[in-house]
Amino acid sequence: MSDSNRTIFTNPSTFILLGIPGLEWAHVWISIPFCAMYVITILGNVTILFIVKTEPSLHEPMYYFLCMLAVTDLVLSTSTLPKMLSLFWFNSREIAFSACLTQLYFVHCFSAIESGLFVAMALDRYVAICHPLRHSTILTNPVVAKIGLVVVLRGAILTLPYPFLARQWPYCRTNIIPYTHCEHIDVVKLACADIRISSYYGLFVLLCRIGLDVILITLSYIQILRAIFRLPTKDARLKTFGTCSSHLCVILAFYIPTLFSSLSQRFGHNLPLHFHVLLANVYLLVPPMLNPIIYGVRTKQIRKRLF
Image (cartoon, rainbow, N blue to C red):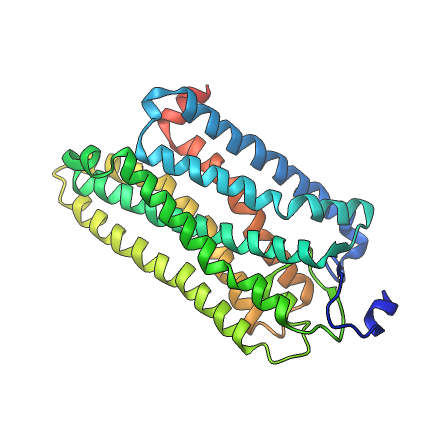
């Protein structure tokens, strides 16, 4: 590792992942909850996909978006967890330069897709509550497919400059990444060049992915709450709001860790490095695990079919 630190190079063939600096002695113990989360993520999301596919009554826009979310969660987890576990269990620290760029692309691309899906699901809840009689005519299957395509293309195109910008910088200081996986900002920080373009573009994507999406979700729920409060009885209000509770829970589980991780990377310079790494892993691992659990517990149709 010390040789890698002293080597002069302009285009490294590999990067070295350190895992969680300062907690190397606990890597095996940390791997146990990480592995458990990965298993739960796979089982939960595959179960959601199977239930929606085999239950005709669930062939509705909300559950189509839920299936897209399940696929996104599976890809997001699989892009990082297998390499992370091999690092913890077998001390497999090396990752090829092109594989590192591919990994960071998948992480950011599918995080953006997941954020876009939450906007699409908020739109579905808005139409279902504010325009219930027109729900089936507004959100038809072709419209849902087009919304899904737009969400995927937005995530893919927004994230596409990341690997190209990272590839163009010269890396002449070190190829050691003090993380468990390749993140865009942590890779470009290793470049011995002015990386302000990458930094500014990363901030722009963050504003689009979190700022714009959160604004759209908030506007949807303002309209939803106005419609709920106009209902005549308390029972009707609680029942209608209950249809949104699962969506609100997964939104909070996704955006809160993502926001804290992104802000801590840019402004939390006094925080311990292992705190940054653990927080980055929380936003990658916890939401994909929680999403199927929340929808399984909170959604009557899925819970009934599961039992």
